[in-house]
Length: 209
Image 1 (cartoon, rainbow, N blue to C red):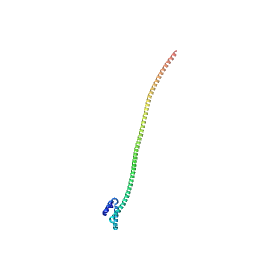
Image 2: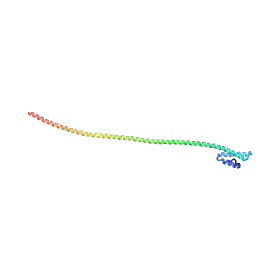
Image 3: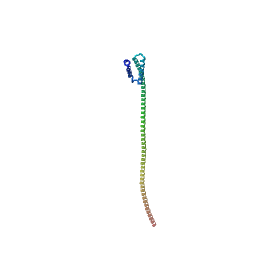
Image 4: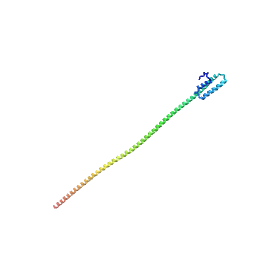
């Protein structure tokens, strides 16, 4: 604002002041500022011998002072807003950190669940494998028992066959012994007959003598 331009009319200078300050302070404070200075200007114009231009200069100086106060309040408000904004940013960062921690925990829980599912599948596989091994062991033992019984049956068959051969051989031996005994008996009978004949002949010879 150019305070040395005293040739402009009062409405022009007020318009310039409004134009220069508009947007920098709240509208309610700006209107209050102009109304208060205009009232003060009218009062001084009616009671003082100071020319209107000087009065306007004084009014504008007062307005500039009020405008500075408004700027000071606006600066404080801006600082408060920056403080609040800083707090908001700080809280936002803390929330982001919390979100990151929660995401990390969710990922860890997901990994645990996946690991649990994997372990469950592996355990089920191990149980199934164990059952298969048990069944296979049972089958192996049954097969071993069958083989053992088959071997015993083969051995019994072999023993039976050997027994049959032995019985046949013994039968043959018995038959040979029977034949031998019969031959011996026949020989003894012949010898006995010969002995008897010789004994009769001897007795006859003795009687003749």
